[in-house]
Image (tube, rainbow, N blue to C red; front, top):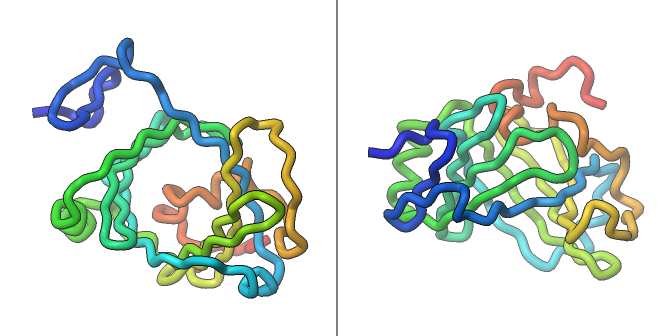
Length: 182
């Protein structure tokens, strides 16, 4: 049996690999509040996401996500800022559904993710539901922290360094409970 809290191991396709043989993936993402609905005219795709957290610590979170009939297990460092380590693995959909229903911390994150192309980049606009209804954020994934991009007119204040907007934090402190929603 493998402990998800084991600091030097990750289970991959039934095998255990030590980090010394494992290349860490890095996600570079900037996050912005959305100021209006003008982005909707440029939507090319949308997906409903349901996700929950199996574990969360100061070091990392372990998430289960279901979208478009597929399921993933995701391990992400809890680093504040635009760059974080991220590992993602396909898992059986039935396993993910059971984990979401029986093992994940509540409430679950439910959102519709809209994919919007703008000036050579794909923006992901998340419209949250449930306990986080009313929250709309836009994310852009980049190849480097200093990569240039054009911010659309509907993207407002950047919140990349504000942990309140991290999905793992929205489980513990849902948007509906926020006093200051700016």
